[in-house]
Length: 345
Ligand code: LMR
Image (cartoon, rainbow, N blue to C red):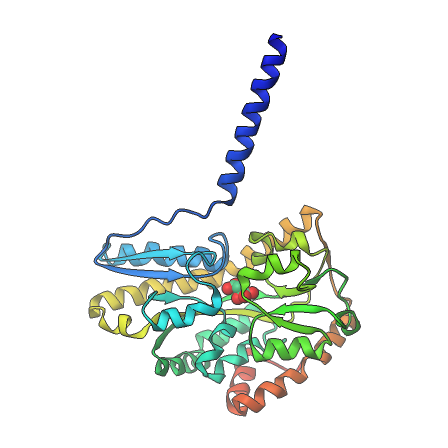
């Protein structure tokens, strides 16, 4: 009798612990709102534990410290406030003051120069990427955006993208008839078409459900996002293609930025400058660490391309450069090639 009671109590405790841990694992992180005179609402679509998530938190820490809490920064991660297709409009309509979308999400602004960042194989290393964003070309591209009601503050890189699917991906034939989720950018859509797949542009927050429901067969992305969103659990094969780079552009609402007292703006500029160095320095380790965790999970098979497969992939994707060049003009592409040391692979 006593034993039965003990067993029942044991089961009840185990259920409580189970339910509580599921709740804590799945509930959205609590956002503590700032009471500062100026509040920056900073929305983004990824987890706090990613390059972008950690960098947004770093900006919050530095901005609040340098302004002595005159400016508070409320971070809304993981699409809790806005999906990526809604961010730009919300920024322009003063619903948020800052966002850090990937390049593809700002094509709607019509500043075509940004499209060059999404070209396949244009950066051969992180150093090549940093050379572009820290040089004249990066600053030139960033300044073009200021005419559109938003203020371009910085570029943050999140490293090389890989591909994944329900079936192994080694050669263009493997992509035939696959529905592949892409970010809504001309270069990315064109790249997937060049491989023979059907590109499906979609919000980042919808990817996991689309995989579960079979609406897509695969996608491209960085290890950071595959891991923190648990997307890898729905993709039995991943290939380290490193075919494109994921670039973010940090944007502020232009009026908000301009009406900040000058001293405050320069404190925020300093906070952003330091944050950008931080962001661009953690991207490699963030993604390497998450890739190791994905491989160790045993839930997906992580594969490499042979040198021959890599050559074929490059040859198949390089014609996308000509497509984009017909939209952006040659000058900006040549500048990127020069600063990135692009040799035509
Ligand atoms: C994506 O849509 O795959 C990425 O832009 C998500 C992100 O912001 O890292």
